[in-house]
Image (tube, rainbow, N blue to C red):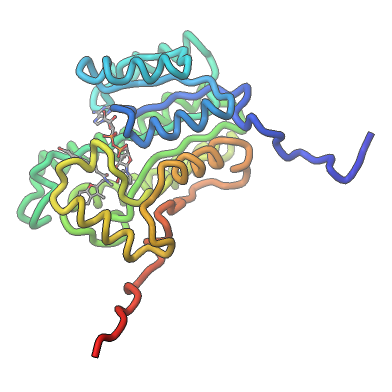
Length: 275
Ligand code: NAD
Ligand code: 0WE
């Protein structure tokens, strides 16, 4: 039987039959957790890595609530820890359909004031290692388990492309992360594996807590953005679903801005003239 509705478009349960690893849930406000919930709602089977002991009791109940079949520690600064985490995926699943990399870190002293004065060699290296190289390392371990049609994403921020006060060394690492996304995408493209990044607007997560001027940044974002609203978790998770599911076919090496249009604005709306 054939009619005009016959096509290869997905029918819902967009992630049904797909298994993937989520790296970077610290608590219920984490972007990785917002993405995980969306993927679970669309039928994905999930595994989680968490940084260490301290976060285990936070993350375990979240993982259990979506019936995660993998829950394993992973410090991306440590090769042995990364190998152990991916070895577990290899043993339990053998195959992997998607990967979410939602990890970034800089020493706090590098996230304020003068970039030139406050960026030490040690902090520069550590920030680059954890925030950019870790995506390359994860891709190397994940790719051998991935079939054509698989997909990976990472999370980035506009501070890679423009100067954002205080973002400093993280901005440099995000620029590297976005370039890594394109080079990983080049290597894995011929294997049918798509690699992309989501550039999210400011969100109220652990990584935003205690950032100097954090609150002001959220309100500036709201005033300047095209949509005149904050970036929503639903919006970020929705784009993750698109890129990780078969809806994202043909999209590779892309950095998608999910920021209420903030990135497109060169100057805010003029204020009403008061005489
Ligand atoms: P978050 O603190 O919830 O997530 C950051 C994660 O990085 C945590 O789970 C932490 O455990 C993990 N991490 C740090 N060092 C690690 C290491 N050595 N090994 C393994 N994991 C490590 O905050 P978030 O806002 O959800 O951040 C997730 C990603 O989104 C980051 O890459 C961040 O740069 C990016 N991002 C955040 C925003 C925002 O405004 N919150 C905007 C755009 C992009
Ligand atoms: O990527 C980030 C934040 C990442 C981050 C946050 C911290 C805080 C705690 C990395 N390392 C650390 N180290 C810590 O000790 N964002 C996109 C959120 C963010 O952070 C900013 C921002 C925005 C936006 C810092 C300064 C200015 C803007």
